[in-house]
Amino acid sequence: MLKKMYIKMFKYTDISAKKRMLRQNIKKPESLKQQLDIMYGEDKINNTFDIIYPVSQENKKLTTIINIHGGGYVAGLKELCIIHCYRLAETGYCVINMEYTKAETKGFPTPIFETFQLLNYIQSHEEIARHIDFDKLFLCGDSAGGHISALVANILESDDLKQKFGVKSNLKVKGLILHSPVFGVFKFGKLRYLRKKMEEVVYNEYNNQSIKNCCNNLELLSKNFPPCIIFTANNDILNIHTNILIKKAKKLNLAVYNYNFITGKNLFHDFTISYPDGKEAKFARQKTKLFIDAVLNNTLINSCGKKNISLLKQKKEDSTQSTKSEKENAISC
Image (cartoon, rainbow, N blue to C red; front, side, top):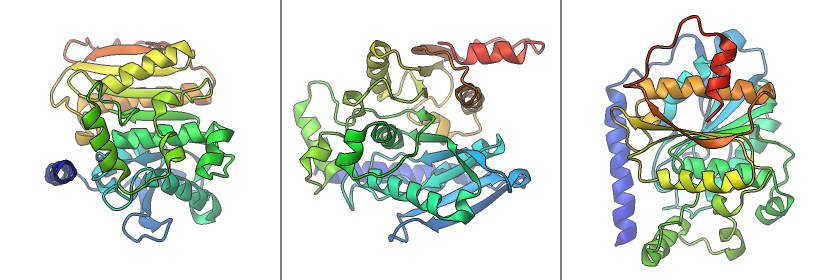
């Protein structure tokens, strides 16, 4: 019963998201080029991705962001992130927008294996690889997609995890860009019954216990975890995951920057993805660009913490403020 209710709830959010998209401008900007629904695996529906990049830089290898959507592991579609991906690509990046198999069909961590399938595909196919600078690779995920992104990054940084997941890859993730992320999917305080039922929903029939034991990012953190920028809101129930991550990250001296919105409109879960042209989402993209620049230029301040943001109270920035000052402010919490 709980499984059916859980899946139905997230399927309903998909319907709401599609209706919301119809009210938004989803036309591809003329400055961008895209290829849609490229297959990276055998499943014609779930093993697909889009590639989006600026027309003016079509013949260049670009800093690349792989976007992994959320949806509670049982729902969500890459199409619901398309405006978000357009806006990132307009900033000058190549964006890979990925689809994956839901837990209702195959249990978690199937999306982890599929992400590595995707990575292998884009490396081995020249028509895709020619757009990607693999030394400047970032993962972006919202909600459950944040969990998938962080787990992939953890695996790539650990020979032990690579062996357990059967991964053969020398790729490195330069950084993570996470929106309302999940980190410890089965962490629900002292509600053991709920945790057990959630495991049944998300893992479905997957029964490899050694792999299941390696799916909680909050227990896998090491000093090798890549720099991470996170966007959350006070009234997002999953904000607690980021709070726990920051506490653990501080002990390891990791670079984790959390911008937490405390006032504003529509600040519910996944607000930056649901309203990609809202002022909060624009703020997030500005900080994301500064974060990426700092990572690639090795100027990122190795700090960890939460910065509360209220755009309603924020005064207009002085137009004469130097770019250097903006960067320093952007990457310090």
